[in-house]
Length: 120
Image: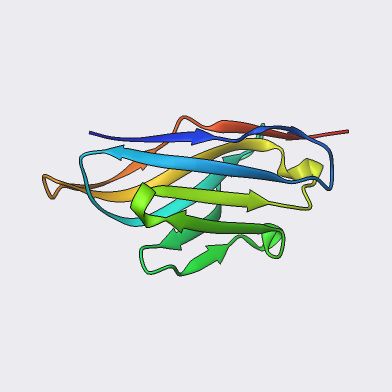
């Protein structure tokens, strides 16, 4: 069993910053990639940023230059540093990971989501 637990969401003013964290725990053999998705009210879930086991990153165009994804392999943790936040960044942010368990089964796991609200 593998679980993802997110933290760090909240209310922030436009132009402000937040850092999201996501910790993976359980019977983990390896993590192939970790990512952040978001879903705004009435919209589909979209990929925000992704980081592979080798450290390669990619971002949705709307957050390039403002958001940065990073990871701590020893802690099985991924971060999303968000700066220059805009009202349109308001969404529930979900952590996602592709994991190989100690059983050697491979699957994707989702966190429960953390709400980010950008408003004055």
